[in-house]
Length: 132
Length: 498
Image 1: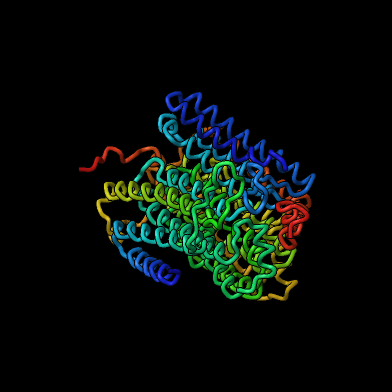
Image 2: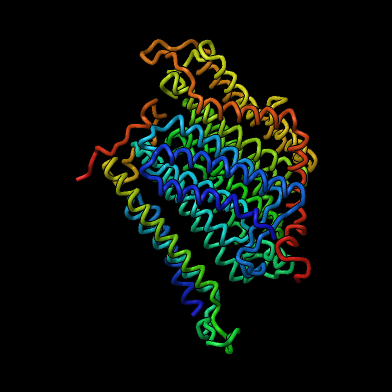
């Protein structure tokens, strides 16, 4: 089981990096999603894969009777999923807004961040350039 | 067990929540935000005085005993960083009050700003690696929002690489963390320190160490991972970019210093040797990049990279004196660099631009501004008796002590190149006559909200230079705690732990 997970997460990392190297923002987004899921599998595998019960304690007891699964990796994974989801949603919005503003998802066609903004430029927003 | 550790984290989040609730009352919201920043500074100062008085403080959150729960630990390095966070946060909050228009500020600025400060404080205080990951994410989320705050065109082109690269860095961090947990079964840094002393799989540990080095190196703007930094730091409003320049890369440096002293101490010969080469390259490449630039904030951005090299150098040499130099450099650099970004904003108010070709004549028309630039700029370049001189002196001494003559030569040469860059800004923006254009030097009166933080930071920089002895002592104590972390481990795990 461990070797299967290792191969799966390894190929997911490879796929994620391949997509990240693309010039298309949408592909980069998918690459990051794949990479973060691969790492969640790594955490899962690193916690040890065993056939045991969930870490629940029966009513009236203070310690579990039989061996239970390690609950910490599960907690870590849950946190990582929540944080990863929030970041991906933000990225999705950022990429969409930058597509609206710059008119392209191709990083080769995006202008360099260019010269220093002149005074007053900070306060003018590009909100009025509404997308389709 | 002391609860004062929680306030530098709690106060910014309370302020962020309050400023969300006051969404429709901009005046009150502004007042709460400023009060929150000052309160955070006060909380940091209290913790600072307690730690310098009574030694390392630790808090087990929720009374879960040490390796199982989350520990907050404040040692000398942490409180020094926290203190600077408080100072820079307050300075940036005041500057933003003068810079950003009220109707825009009211929307989300205050919330994001205080979440960022809270995330920074959490990262400096936590004693748990996974918790550090969470604080990094909190900080990143807030910084993404601030990076695009205002939504100008240039900000998007800067923010896209910033977001992608930083996300990649946190994913690498998470990967290293998972593997480290798999090998050791713990994520508490003090506990990891003990486990490392007797762990067999040293080769694997070294591999994981390099994963961490890459992850934190991206955040710190270390060679060869720095390209996102000069592409993005000059795009957001001044107050935001000053806070970023002062704090964000330095969290990466802090994390490197923390993990490579407390956790990855098993193979110093390999890890720190690689770090030494990288640090030297970072110094050189950063300063050469700056020489090619011709815009105020871009030059400063490249100098962040070269200065990060100095701090990493202190860690890589791995002697008490070198680490003292690194900590001193951190404190000095954060204040000076943020100040330079703020000064660039004041100059832009007058000339209307930050393109050095179109600037000029500031020295004649605004001698006060020229002085305010002169102090941090030549402190950065390492002129005695300003703070940068002592920081550089310590590092040169440390590299001579371990007979790394080439490194010492690089430190001196990069210092000279820094002088060159600062003189370039000085000549172009301040000395040369104003170029004939429509952008003539207008008569602008300084806004108090902007000039006071700049003066305060300049004063602090002078004080660190003149009163170098107390800061040196603090940095020395911090370095000794890092080199011999028994006190840290004991504060977290208690005396009797195996």
